[in-house]
Structure formats: structure tokens, C-alpha cells
Image (cartoon, rainbow, N blue to C red; front, top):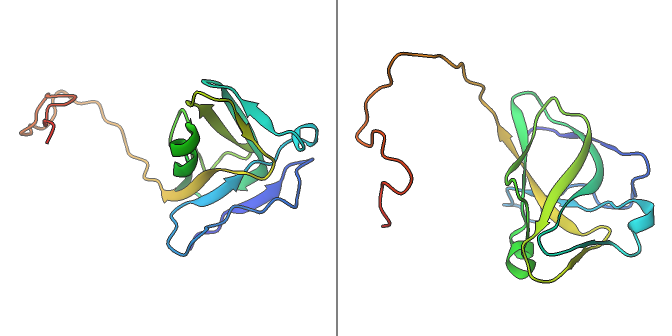
Length: 154
């Protein structure tokens, strides 16, 4: 098991639970909104089609060779249209800034993000860095240059 080191941001509410796996088989640990003090009692309203970075109150240290993927919570997406516009978002192992979650409201109603709400999930995944080499030709395959939709509907 890899360890992700965390520190609280200045002004973060330390009573908000840290990222956690809700079940034994969960791939993602839930991230929670940790709102600035002036927004904690009212929450943040995300209007339809609005995008906003929601703070978690945390900074992370991810081991070299891993990334943190930020993914939507399926229940928020299904019931309210709340998702991530760049899913999965990637947090690199050398990033040490605030951990924020970029949310978008694809629903038709404004949505209120309350202080402490579970807003996304973090999946820790290994990363392989490849060497990039310019060449004169690429190997042949059956598919060749056939692009989007070329393998059919079925």
C-alpha cells in the first residue's frame, strides 16, 4: 500500500474528514469540500453550466511513480449533473499546491455545495514515463489509420 502524505491548508476546517475509502473494495477515496470560513454556513452555489474550483483544505505529497486521479462521484453526476470537466483530473507527484476539485454543473438547476460534502474521489495510480522517439515510419497494423468509430457500433 502506498502512502499519500497530507497537510492542512491555512484556514482549513480540521473537523472535515480526511479522504477515505467508503467500502473495502472502493477504488477511490472520497474528497470533501472544505470551504473558506465565509462560505461554510451558506455553501457555494454552482449555477447550471458554471465551473468552479472547490477547495478540499488539503495539500498532498504523492510518491514518485504515482499520480492522483480526480474523478466524479457517480451519484452527483446522475442526480444533479455535477461532474468534472477534465475527468480524470491528474495531480502529479511533484505538485505541492492546494488540492482543489474543478466541478461543473451540467444540470438544469443550481446546485449547492455544502461544507463537508463529498464532491469527488481520488484514485491513486501508477505512472510510466515513456521515451519519445521521432521516426521515419510506424509499424503496420490491421486497423491502420482508421480512426474514430472505425471498429463499428457492436
